[in-house]
Picture 1 (cartoon, one colour):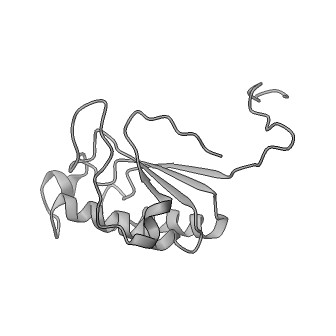
Picture 2 (tube, rainbow, N blue to C red; picture 1 turned 60 degrees about the horizontal axis):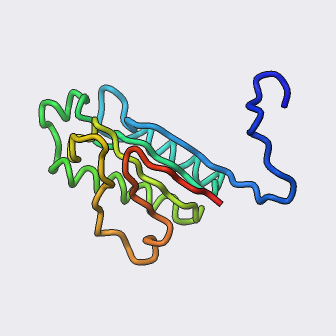
Length: 143
């Protein structure tokens, strides 16, 4: 490769290329829990149609002012479920694989490291094959 390129970044001839989008939370602005940046991210996924979208937490940020003061309309777990549902439903037409990676700042999740995957049993049956909850750290094989 040229300057700035990693020598192992080249895709071998004949290999299928995969478009991977990675995003890291928090998915809110510092002054609101409206999740406007999350809506923007879902729009990018719908537009670009990546094969895989890896989403790193926090999804419900323990450091957010409204979370710290418990000014929420539901439980932390309920806010997380709504966040996941927004992502899953908003990316359904893109058909991409979704990978959810927890953060130590996810207020509703285990504060231990390594972190276990999120438990989210309420996924619609048709979405389960493309939605993956993994641990932190984790190793992903894509392709």
